[in-house]
Length: 333
Image (cartoon, rainbow, N blue to C red):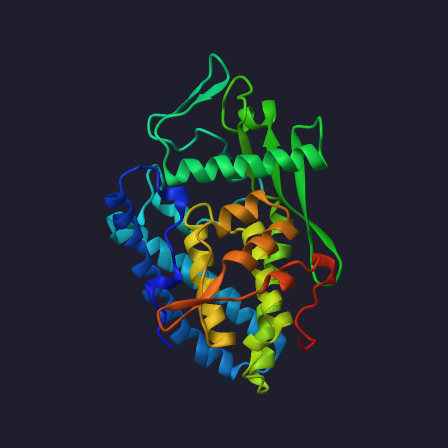
């Protein structure tokens, strides 16, 4: 199988301009991801073929994660388009420390051309809309609705992630009001301003283990002859779980989204023999939406690339299953 740039649509979050020509330039990053995914698939295949235990399979997926972090570092070191503005090179292979968190901001007006935060009035002044500003506004609405429903009157909301065994693990943290402002170094609350903060290290690592365990389970099924895994709804849903867990349990200070996207496309090609096309906003939806809403969003927007066309990977009916009802893919659908 050949993985192409079609698997990696350009995230709207980086399109902070209204100029489509610049969007096309940014879209060129997909070819680097496709090349890395093909190399990763060639590396992964023989190692999984030789694996005989779930532990060995899980260890191979974990090592793939580390390999892709090194790839992302090398890309940042040697290609101008590989490094984000204001990023330090070593951040691309530096794990998030136990006493550190990574922060993202969302809300109407952010990432627009000419928009700015007015700290004197505590407001966001909107400029010319961009794909990034429209996405930021949509995510702000999602987070606001979650606060209204889950934590009215509070400025912090803890994401709680249910894993296949029924255990609940803390994911990332959502902030608003004074807590959101403080997390970004602003002296006063900013109206309509929301922040997501990565979770505790132990929880992130627990979620990573759950993700790699799910992938190892799928590979184990493929290894014993289940070559039609993509036809099994439970298997596809288990993969979506792994997607959510990896984004709720990020590892590196910079480049984490590209690393996880490339890993997911590689893993999907291996276990399902299908080229996955990821939702362009998969990372930020995992940060902002609750677990069930993420599954439903992926059910609507994730697809596979087949002969130049796309096909949904998870039906809407399947995506509507509650997290606690989801198995790790042991039953046939």
